[in-house]
Image: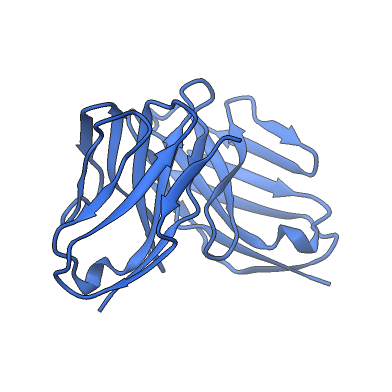
Length: 112
Length: 108
């Protein structure tokens, strides 16, 4: 079954404690992306990756890092989380043929 | 002007009604547009792609008006299960830009 798997589903942490949200896909898609979703602001892109070892900033990259060492994984790293990074995060991959985005089930992050 | 704009709603309609949403966009270089459906706190899922000729899928019809720079989604014979937030999206070179979504509430 085609899947984008994000972990964890829920995470509560404290300011400054480094964390990683994992994202893995089994569809062999080259393109992967991270979004955050906030009330009144909609979905905003954080980072994206066109292929292995190629990453670029999206609209709201401040405070985040990503890596793409292999095609299937695209972790989102918060080196020093702050309360304004409390949000619902989605990882997504894109099918190059039909441009369809496949989203993971989301990670609700709360930074206290 | 924001790249993709939608009326947030909510649109409250009775079952069986026909409802239409519009989404305006800027930067007309975009070639591809999409409608996604999102249930509360769940991941968005592709509802329809929208191309120049428009397209129809059962009760759903999507249209693209390049001259006026908007796309539309028409839902006929609304069902309770259509209650959700509908996001329009515009494909750029390396990204998909989403509107903030329009909430639809279908009541019995």
